[in-house]
Length: 406
Figure 1 (tube, helix red, strand yellow):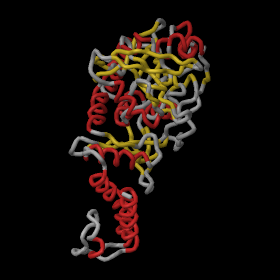
Figure 2 (tube, one colour):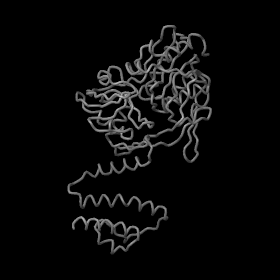
Figure 3 (cartoon, helix red, strand yellow):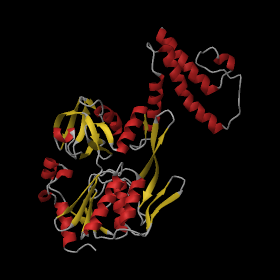
Figure 4 (cartoon, helix red, strand yellow):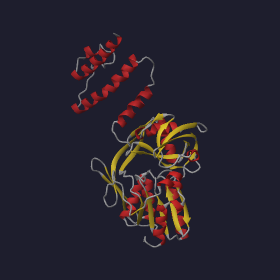
């Protein structure tokens, strides 16, 4: 009988909202608001308010009937998270206070966790490792780029729940977390220690044959400074060519990408964006740049800002792309932080290469397609391949050494 009364109350509330009952009748239900004070609003706004009134009804029902006290801040976080998830876009989501703190930590290049970079792969809806930081607990445990995270502490997580999985993998330094990976058809369990991680977003060196090599792991943190330092050293050494390695680079800040393009590309538009209203923004660079033959290494996990830089280099005929077709993420997100410390990431526009191409869902084909030995990639990981097993890097060196790139 008690549950029947609860259901009847709920049905009555919904029916009265739909039919517009009198204030006197509505007052008989404790969760219905008084209508003594009224305002006139457009029908569209009224209908929108009625849609969200359901949330208030649910909140009051929880307060009235749930058998324990609840945390209202968690209720609001859950409602906000569900609203953003309802968009159906992997890159549009809500940040709790803790999530926002972690995002800021990673953007600055320091956090406590296991030391690997991830991407939400929409092709198989799996959380995919794109980089394992050198000297990190993940590397020591044997995690490799290309591994798919299936379970964290025996709980399943899909790409849509990547932030939840990251929350679990981060934590108090010295503690451990169990991660179940899918590597090919093999399932592997790792027990990984959490430690303080300092991310180095750029590494560079000069290869034999006087070729500058720079790997950009992400367009975040100190990436611009690291790339500018590499360019400065290459210029001082008068290298004969430069290899930019963007393999497994999942993107990052658009501003960092454009600033880095400004160092190596001629004057012009690097990228343009267009929102749903048709508003277009063009991001341009000046005429001063380091002019040197270039090869860019790309693969299926070169995404977003990586594709912006690759697409601009291709469109300006400033270098050759070598490797495999890129990921195909041709959309731009913005992150908004609210005064209470929470935040949201929203996809706001499509982006276009200088030639006007939108590569979303398509990717960029390399000028020279080169496949890697999958057994070597499985054994060493994409970012740790010895030169003798890295056919893509070998091809880049060959193209520059033989003068095939001008």
